[in-house]
Length: 457
Figure 1 (spheres, rainbow, N blue to C red):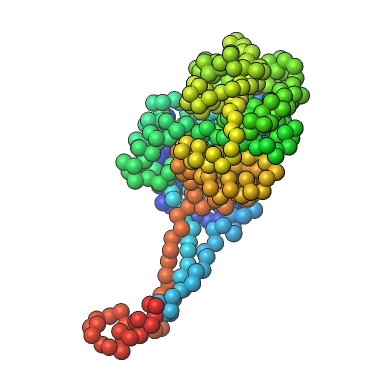
Figure 2 (figure 1 turned 60 degrees about the vertical axis):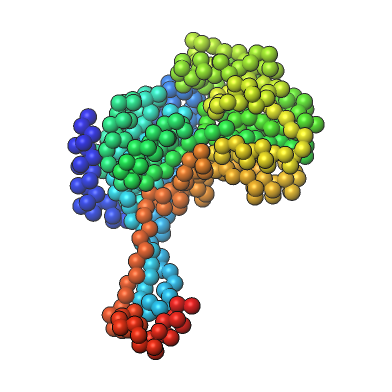
């Protein structure tokens, strides 16, 4: 595949103005929606092959959320694309001031392997709604899903509008060496740094959706049964391979033992006595990540689970107790089905502790204490999160989703998705029927000086 040829054809297509029409954008979104529906069965089969996802989970967490975002953009693109009048200072009389959303142009969307369909097509829908062209680069670690995406997009769009480039590091490097108008990347922090480094060479704006160690706090007032139920769901969904999964638990010492009991009970209830025999329980994406995760499990601190199957690349939902910050599992993002539990005694100590950690993509708090809820949401910096639940904050087009600091920059979903793929032009339309003389030389005319001071106060 000639990347240079594709990019040049997309530049010419964008410069023709073909993508600027709101009617065209909505038609393309509708076409994308129909194509996703057509390929739904194939998409689910591919997700099963790549990650062991059941049809139910594939629809709930990937296909369904993607269709929701596309349909939301179909309904709202007209509104999002409107010019917005703003106040005009009296000193600029007579004029109209307004903001005009404009597409960046030729965009690059690089997606990860853990939610390979959702995190490819969802940002594509936002890019299309905003009026851009796009080159999509799905992950090489999810080849079955990447193949379906390429087949689907090739059928749906001309490559001069939307194209798919498959492959691995060589193709990634080639794409990053090209000049795009905007880059949208979802993946690890290490690769995100490379993307940002390349983008800096051409001063290309970027959105980075990264990850990190997202804490989950359980205080002494939490409803433990419900907390355990929701934490187990969020932690072990997709075998823990979720960027906003609770990475570790910070549990109040007084309720830790009861919390662990409830967690173990919930794992059995949700995944069965033998999770590795559960046909709806997925797998680790490849041997490399499987071996990395196995190396993080400390058998001496494992109080539940720990079973592995090298042949199927599966690791059972695992709970580790008495974990410290010095343990290997606390040195990196886990991205797997291992739940380390740490404890605290004084809630106020958490602010300083977490403030000195890299800013996480998500933070979760289970509490009935209104003061704790108010203080955590006010004082700590993180991308987003939930009170008394996990993960669900990203499952809406009404709120932006994104990181902060080490966990990323920029947000998307719904209006924020449209805005992030757009540049907002600030424009003053100055009228010609009057021209106030105060700004022109000579400046020594005292009357104009007095008027200028009045206008600019």
